[in-house]
Every structure is written in structure tokens, then in C-alpha cells.
Amino acid sequence: MALQQHLHRILAEAAAEVAGAVFAEGKVLDHELAAVFTRNPKWGKRDRGFIAETVFEVVRWRRSLAFVANVPEWDTASLCAAQWRRMGIELPDWWRHGGAAVTEMAVREAALAEQPRAIRESIPDWLDELGAGELGSRWDAELHALNQRARVYLRVNMLRNSREEAVAWLASHGVDASPACGLPEGLVLPEGKTLPKPLRAEGRVEIQDAGSQRVAPLLGVRPGEIVIDACAGAGGKTLHLAALLGNRGTIHALDIEPRKLEELKRRAKTAGVTCIRTGLAQPSNLAALAGQADRLLIDAPCSGLGTLKRQPDLKWRLSPGQLDRVRRIQHELLAAYPSMLRPGGVMVYATCSLLPSENRGAVEGLLGSGAVALLEEFQISPSETGCDGFYAAALQVR
Image (cartoon, rainbow, N blue to C red):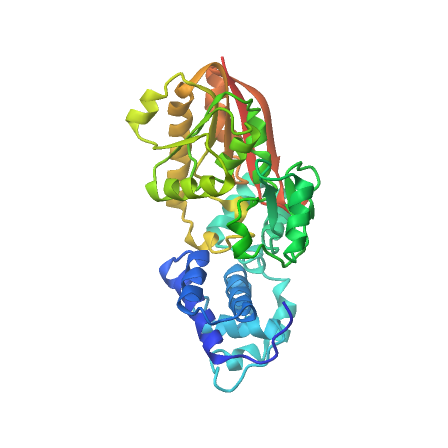
């Protein structure tokens, strides 16, 4: 967005309030922004953009901003002041937070390069140590890439229009989109651009990262098959599977949260998808589906570290205990869910993590048992692709 040379008090206070809720209360950044925008419907696009840019960058660069401004990491108002200085905005007298500290920013910015990686790249010490321990020399490049702003990728709903038709339709609404290399259904928007909310409700395109778009095709679904999406959530990959099936077949979309399944139903209706059956991921439903599926997708709960471009608040909410918990869940899912496949059926295990312990490390036990054979796997590297980090392995039940 264009630099805003003057700070508006109401917007400045709103940005500091949202950042404070993220840091002090562990709130989800996207949800907090949506809530404050709902409460203030008169704010225009530029106002919302200013608040969102401020908060995302403060959350992304929390530790490095604290260093260059020489303030505590919990001093949200001063962190905002430092970010505004980075954006070229002059601080008015009424915003006294951090005023003295940020006058020394130029000197401390120069010294930032000499600080430990966890401060330079703004990440908790324990998470930096974990990433280095699991990824070794690759961690530097991956972490740096995860701190860059994400571009918006779209997946064309082929049930509603071709990619060429979607590009023309978007252009008619003032949205410039170009084909994403290597993705037959993918589009990418220019840097800093997003899809206007009214267009999201049309069902012709879905916001879906390029890495995520590679997961569903790995299942190799064919029209008429029975497919289970065992951790469907709000259904991004479920809808992709429906399109790959040509809406011919049955997808059982399971999740533990009814709210997400209701959102999936709404999205499916908008997208013109009729082959999805939703259900809770509970023992009775799992038992009823035993031996039924031709294909099974386990888009497993994970650390989400591959998505830090879009969710920088995640690194401050994640804890070692939470990571241990999701690893246990991953192993439990891999132990229980393959029973829903027919003999010879294919499953894909996927995460949006970069950590080998959540990825190949999670499927090693299943491979070692001889119950499945590895057909294909990939790890998407943010530093090599500019996309989110994803892992997926296709396994065939013997």
C-alpha cells in the first residue's frame, strides 16, 4: 500500500489493540482483525489496509522490532511506533509510546544483523532451536522465506468455469490474475493484492495456496470412487477433490468440529458441489466406513510452521507441549484411519509443516510395519518456491 504520512489516532489505537490481544491473550490474528473491522464498518479499504499491514508486520517482526526500538517485547504500543517509523510515518506528539526509543532506531537497525538468528528473524528461542535441530543448514533459508509476505493464490473451480474463463471473469471485476506455473487450476495475484470479499462468494475460485493445491491430486481420484477426507475442516481440499471427481462419486468429509463442517456445507453449495457427505469424526462413523474407501486423505493436525507467511501469530501461540500433542494425534490417526480403506486403496498423509518429525517421521512406523507401500512423496520448500511449506506422502494399503 502507499505510504501513509500521517497517523490517524483511531486507526493507530485499533492496531495496537489488535496486536495486544494477539500477544497478551493468544488471540488469532485473522479473527481479531475481522472482529475489529466488523465493529467499524465505516472504515474504508485504505483504513483497513493500514491496520492490517501494521499488525501483521508487528506480529511478524516482534523480536526484531523490540531490539531496534530498545523496548520490551510486550510493549505493543512501542512496537507499533517502531513499525510506523519503518513505514516512513512520522509519529505525532499524541503517540508518546516508544517515542524516545525509536529515535535511536537507525543505529540499532544496523546492529540487528549481528544479533542471534532468533532475534533477527523474530522467532521464539525454543522454536529456532527445534527448526535448526530438525532441518540443519536448511533452517536459515526456510525461516527467512517464512518471514516474507505471502502472495495470494487461487484455485479455479473447474465445475463452474475453466481457468481462462475465470481469468476473464476476474478481469471484468478489476482483478488481475495470471496462471500459476505447474498448477493446472491455479492462479496467482500480483504482490500485495487479494481477492475482494464479494467475489469469494461466487464459487468460481477459491483462495488456496499453491502448495496446498498439490495435495489433493496426489490421491489420484477417479469419477465414481468413494473418497474420505478424514480431517476436512472447512473443506478447501475437500472441494478440490470434488472437482477432480467431476462431482461424480462420494466424498465423506469428517471432522471433530461441527462448526467447520457447517462452513464446508455452505462452501460446497456455493461451489455447486453435490457429492459431499459430512459427518463427525467419531468412533461410530469411522466403524461404519471400515473397508469402504477407495481413497483416503489425512490432512493431519500439525504445527502449521509451513504457513507462517500467512499466520505469523502462530509462532507466538505454539508451545512445545502443543507440538508434542499434535505429533501424538498424527500417530493415532495413522494407526486408526487406514482401516477405512479397501485392500489396495490409496491414502495421502499431509501436513503444512516443515519438520521431518511431523512428516516422514510420522509415516515411518506405518512403512516399517509393511502394511503400506510408499508410492510418492514431496516436501514443498518455502525458500525454493515462495509458497507455504507442505508435506504429502501417497501410500497404498497392501
